[in-house]
Length: 211
Image 1 (spheres, rainbow, N blue to C red):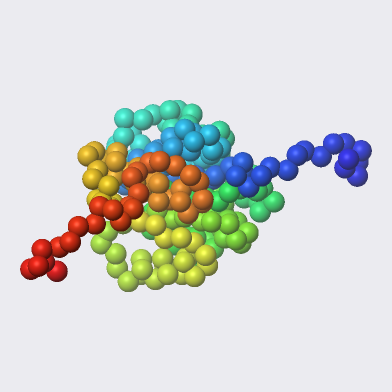
Image 2 (image 1 turned 90 degrees about the horizontal axis):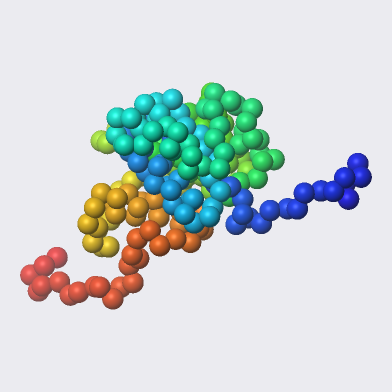
């Protein structure tokens, strides 16, 4: 019983806590969409923050509508609502993934400039020592970008640019996207089968002249 005589809600196990997903306006919003789809299919609760620019990019880069993407999440928060649940450290989450993450968002996170909910939620994730995965999407990178990534990493963020692997023999663009999404889920300890993992059995000797 609580001090006021009511019944306290049951504590949620870490594995049952929601994952905060932020989709910002970099190219590659499909990573965020596929992340939401994967979490839904895995029975993992996703709380979505969608930036205004991300909403625009959905129409440019994907066949998905805003309503379809919002429907993949259990809860959706307006990016301007800095008083929403993920803005407080007392709101427990399993972690946060920003997919994709613009350089502007990276810069704000690295400088604790919490001007919207995406950045505030990311800042809270860091201060509570939860996993924050930043799928930074930009190329080429100048030194300022690299310094921002280094600073965010120093604060505890995981820098996970969408760099595709090919050992799993991808056949489609979705295969490439799912492999990166799977790598992000690995960081939060979420089991999945989004891509075929390297086991070492496929390793073949190089030709004598190869290096």
